Length: 386
Image (cartoon, rainbow, N blue to C red; front, side):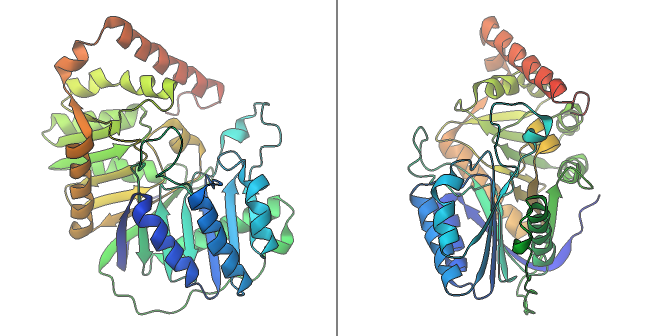
């Protein structure tokens, strides 16, 4: 399904939790009628408790507050923070609770990976930032490098509809029909934006490939430059070939990837693709300054996307994801400048000769990892689809 672009939006780029959480907190504190919040992780840490307190206070002053958290990513949330929220009148649902954590079933791989918030139908937040302290997380070098956007304008309509529909679906599936209450109609507002933007989701029904297709359309139409930053990058054949073909026809293709090892198998599986990408002319930068969690791209200085979707099998085949795509030179230029600063300050470019000089054992380990991931995709029932 093609992206439906709506004019007249104001989309503000938020870099890392340092910009995102104050903006989210301000919106929650100013809520008058309704708050929806969806997250993959809702951690019991300084940031999680701060957002929890703000949501609880909003509920106490009469705002309808609805929180939907993933049953795997936020598996400790139900024990620690959920009771505090519900005591204050916040409605809480868990997406696919982890009742049998050690029993493998295909549907358990389908997670809620979206990070969305909508307040009073007047402002929304979309991106890759979980409710987690990115400055003091054990094992991480602060801040975790990620993005979100604040959205005002007509695009609020489809974002609001999406969070409302998913809430009602989970409430029905959970037999929590009392949570399927009144939904407030977004206020009629005179918007002050001039940006053309679209809201895209990935689900397991009608929108299985919307985000991937938007990427591919932009890559196939690129004339000058593609800059893509992704935390977990293991694209399928079609996506890889699109990037390589763009580089071969003279487009500058830059891919900024995770340099630190977070998930060992995926880290080395990604590196199995380096040789082919570098040979085609794709430039690869590895980010070492901190942990890279970004899921963004800029094409030709006018098309940009920010969201929750990685370019890997989990995001493109299994999880519920959400991205905003913006056609605007000012916004794309700001994101492009931010990515350049990240590369200048915290990344190293991997040259083709550097990769060739890697020990054969190292490259062999990468290919073994890649094929293990492919086997796991097949066992999950998605072989041949990525």
